[in-house]
Length: 150
Image (tube, rainbow, N blue to C red; front, side):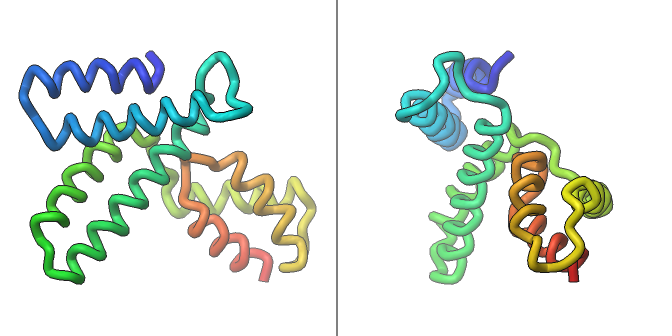
């Protein structure tokens, strides 16, 4: 079952349960998927799983950042909404790699590319960001690549 179909089923369930916050989050996910599917240059067979994961990761990051800002501004009501939506988005995210798994995978990519210095970080990041899309945060990937190439 594709992500879009899973979201549609969850929307029906949330509507029946009258769960407003969950429904709003699910509709937001569906909206982003539809926008990506209808974007110029999009494939006719729907979104690839890595593209779906990128959309979900972006949405999760937006919710996290918004919740943090609302927390700093003492807006607990808005922060609670963002955190509730974040929880829904995270349900559909693929399992993230652990720190040790990520380190091993990046070491393998560095060996595959043949990088030996920090000057070749761009080559490593190009391959790593494609292979690890949806499995790890790019910020974490970048920090590990810098550390391992230093």
